[in-house]
Amino acid sequence: GSGTNSLTGSISRGTDTLSFANTTIHTDGRFTRVSGGNEDINGRFYNGAQALAGIHKAGAGVADDVAFGGSKVGGTITP
Image 1: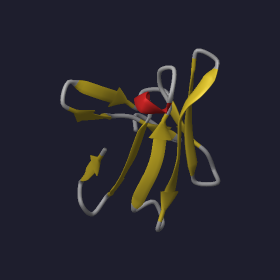
Image 2: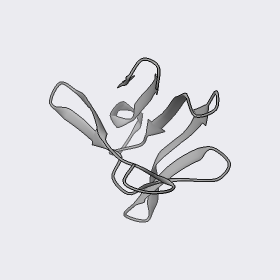
Image 3: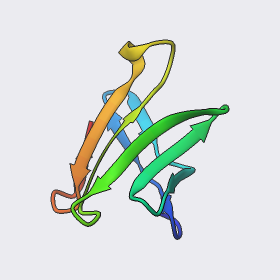
Image 4: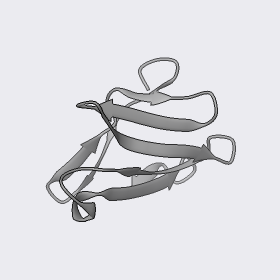
């Protein structure tokens, strides 16, 4: 990220892009982002922060939600 306790960057699939701007890393290994008063990104780091997994809740229902995960070793986060 751009500083301590932050996560930045984005993941893309087709023409859809999910930005991690303004996502906060918490001391317990979770990361979250609040947008419009609602938590829209919720995830967790694993294996000493070598991997992560989470969900982005968007739109009106589960059809718009995106689960994601990836590892530092692999170098990418695959939605």
